[in-house]
Image (cartoon, rainbow, N blue to C red; front, side):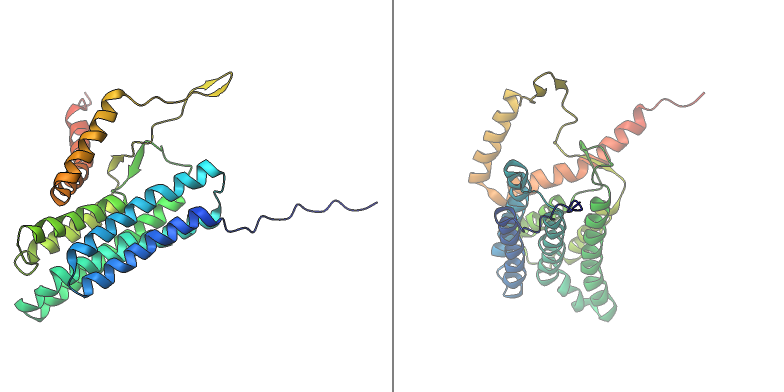
Length: 259
């Protein structure tokens, strides 16, 4: 009798979601080149374009049924470029390189802060990959790398738009880079806005309806974004970054002392 053959493994690299991931990585790569050329506004916009592609590729993969382990790992490597290396180098070229004006030691602190941010982004992404399917999907453990990059880049974009140079704000830039890096590897929980498990029905999982006021907020955000992109993005990024520590403090204050 013939021995049953093992089913062939699917070795396809699905084109569409991975093409979107590649576009996001290219946007991060372009941000590095633009920052090295002194075009900081273009560099910041490129990182936000990378964030847009990052938010789309996974959803496209799930909707089309083309999710794969290759895509998950490739997405993490692309995120390291777009939300780890790119923000660190944009901030370095805009402000942290100016630490050299204060001496040799401050100059080393400048590039060390940029490296710390990039290393924390890599650790954050590695930890996220190991926690898939383990942690509650409603929460991120630590500030996610796209949100951290959004805070860094919206700060550069807004300050540059206001006419401030990076050299003037170099110490604030060092502090922001360190804080963003540490928030990524912290254990502070941030809302993911993905919702929890959907209840089962005889027809299958129950669909989750979006409240009407949520749609109004989205429309209001888009209108404000068209009016003043850098300041709106900066305000949203700051609000989300402090929401994690704020929720943690609120929970500590409401916790009753043990008798």
